[in-house]
Image (tube, rainbow over all chains, first blue to last red; front, top):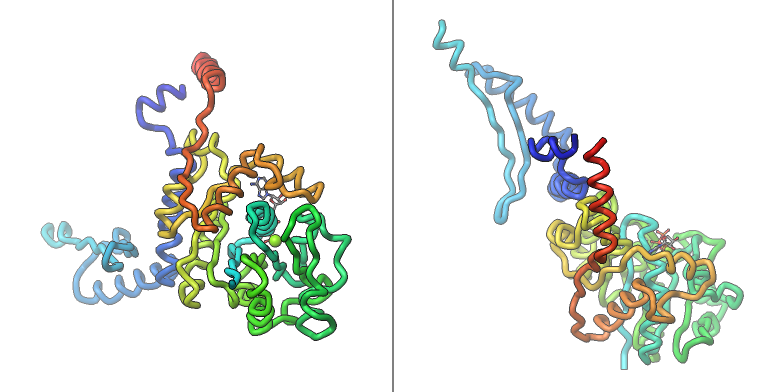
Length: 88
Length: 269
Ligand SMILES: Nc1ncnc2c1ncn2[C@@H]1O[C@H](COP(=O)(O)OP(=O)(O)OP(=O)(O)O)[C@@H](O)[C@H]1O
Ligand SMILES: [Mg+2]
């Protein structure tokens, strides 16, 4: 069974790798003093503001914080609801 | 002649600060250095028992600061070595009995007669931590290869930098090469990359450290244990020597054979 999982890449990454990824995120948030909770708040407010002007898909909105080599960024990914408009 | 003040701190508790302070004290003293280990963990003193000197304490750091004795009277000499001393913490007081200025003054008074003053910091980032860092010329940060310990180390690294005491150097304690090899423990490279800090030593998980804590004879007294050797390497690096970082010990042929057989067994189930 294990072998099959491995062949199909279904296996979880080793826990050391998971630790590293979790730390990468936690340290980034700690250093910038931007908590995941704050990102949620920002997301809700962005959805409210944007959808007043443009139809968007609120469930698809993602606000993330990333550490770069030179600048750290807040990235908001906001999918528009173009499909529905085209159908109208 | 003026001593270097090296503070050993961590953020997270229980990662090995006191063990490391005691062992570096022993290793440095064995190498001819005149050393005072200072227990700055007021109210939770442990350095005395790690060094096996708990029965010889008369005065403590707070007695010195509050003028009940002279500094020299509070120093406990370790008779097993030429020049190793302990300045014990007070056990029945709390961290507010000491201010940062007191630590600086005490260390300055000791500087002229010794080569190294090793300060064992309490866990946390409050007054006790600030007291321990105040006199430091150099700060060593201890972490374990675990998420919570690395996260707290990162916080402390930031604070040390803000205090103008950086750059600190990192000690990774309780590393298990076996777990790293099978991917179930953060490896040294990952920790260094995440924390963006220089390494001064890696100490493996080693049962002899626990035996040593039971008996009050730090493992650094001999270099026939993996942890003992690691402490001596760190001591040499503190003394300015270039000591290469040895790669992790790989498991031997038999060990690998057993593992292979175990793996085969699982497949057949
Ligand atoms: N390399 C090691 N291998 C095995 N056990 C270890 C190792 N390092 C430390 N320990 C054990 O871990 C425990 C905690 O160590 P220690 O008291 O030195 O931590 P600490 O950081 O000073 O704790 P505190 O924050 O409470 O002051 C002790 O029981 C010690 O024996
Ligand atoms: Mg301690």
